[in-house]
Image (cartoon, rainbow, N blue to C red; front, side, top):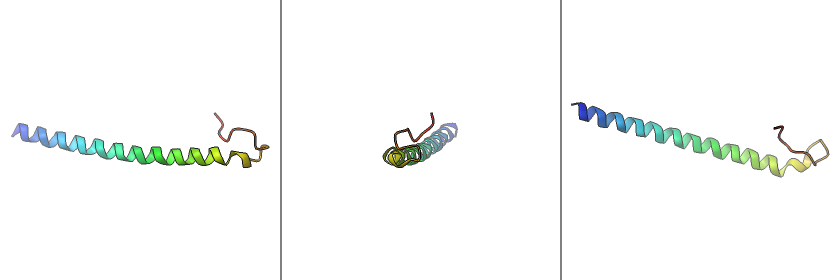
Length: 56
């Protein structure tokens, strides 16, 4: 009974990790799109168009 529970627990952990990794990939893709939009649209900023669009 214990090996069956361990295999089930391992399957649940791997499923959860796979779901978390997929969510992280979507978040990374959204951040990349926002960064690219800011990079290409920085020329139309109100600060003369020569500054960086981010503040760090």
